Length: 201
Image (cartoon, rainbow, N blue to C red; front, side):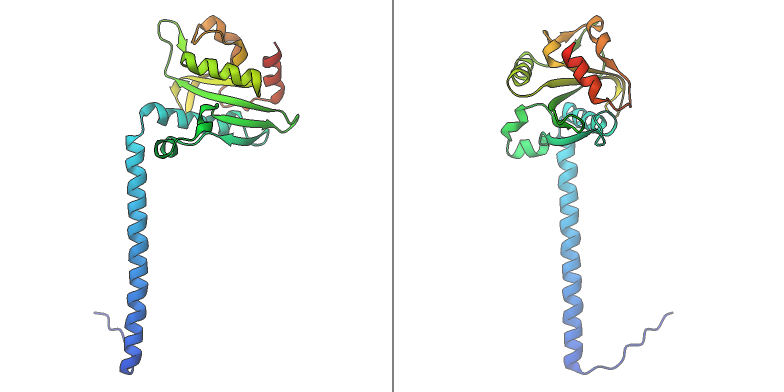
């Protein structure tokens, strides 16, 4: 048994002490409740998020961490998350996922990230027709657009990566023979010189 010695205090001091403790416990309880409620909301939103969006966001994180690294590219813009757009759609979400700035040349360019589990009937569907049309328009009127496609494995560790200038894409279904020249190394930062070579050849 543990005895705690509490010195005798005048009644008015005891009242102040109890009020102070009650205030501290009340604030702590409120903060704990808010944290639990916020955490539950995030979990619920994540569960409601379509699987395609979860994969897409994971692959975007992969690209930023391993391919378009911050040592070589400044992140100028990143499209809002699924949760943000669900509550209040941001018009700029119609642009490709990333806007980067090459730290060597100062050139800015877009990257649209796509992850696919694999080929279907020996073809890879990269996007919808209306999306390709929009990317081509942005590529022509604003800045260069590249499509970074991860294939196989998982969004956090794809088996293959292809980096394609959108101007080279004529159809939404891509054959292996076309993709071969755009394949890049997994988990390897892409140098700016490689991007500009692809764009100009």
